[in-house]
Length: 450
Image (cartoon, rainbow, N blue to C red):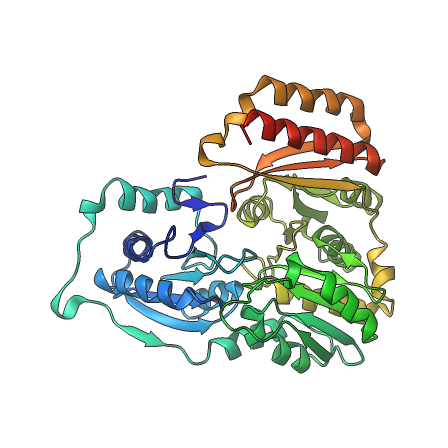
């Protein structure tokens, strides 16, 4: 992880941590690094989510981009995957999304896309960081008529919706679905998209006001959708996060279907249709053990990546795979998109549901989930990486790993987007793994002075 960029761009408390000055510097440096080989006047697309700080950071980014001679094209409120799609579709030189994804409103972030529509490699992000932090004198500002200009794209939402529709071959009529838009980007697209696909659509958390993004709603707060689906006799519910690159589902009984199960549903369907490239699905170290058992039973190879959809994507590109994702609901369908897309994922699952003639709960039975416990321990900057070398913490982890043996696993890792250490344990007995997780979390707190 870099000095500015984590696993999913630069992120922090808007204005005080992710400052206007830093946003302007990122705009300048990104424009120079990402367009240094072009011979024409560079064009960079900018999208944003609905949080109140996004307009402010958009203005700062535009100032930075234009000050080094590139043009900024403002897309308005769109999902993150819309930026990834449109940057390639419009032959732009780069794309920027202003969003802190699933985080609460006080946070914001800056995600960068290359002209290919893919997120940047670590090496390119490090080059941008070096320009900002180590060699700012190399940034040359333009003046007179050489500065860039700002224009607005009025068709971004429509173009993105048509792209998703083109990726789905099935009429979804007859399906009654509930959508939780997280008061975020999907509020601008979801209703029109799924209605035009034929579904009967009911919406919740679709009235963003700048301050309510992800607030007790969306893919990180599924309780409202779980109740809503049952109360309104829906066939399925879909929940997106603030920038709509994640999707989780709810079956007709109100039971949660996480990203692992959604990937399993889609991978099995693709395998049966002969569409699963190399008969493999890419998942992460956080993926439930049950996925491995599902994959073996269905003749599917499991490829494991580090946490973060960018690392899932790297494995997919390296191995020629076309389905991959994370338990959190980032799912990549590489035949149709260059990044995780919550609405594309949801539409794919609904297509499978419609064609199967089954209930959503029956589809989800494709995979058994091992009991899993996750505890987050908040840390200060001085504690980063330190816990890995603390013998009391590592010895306790090793002790519990020996107890679990092959019937479970322990994963302790730092979040790439938040100041947290995540303690995750899976096993057959919930009470056992819960006690282990609590003990490890308490030990981390004790040794880090909290």
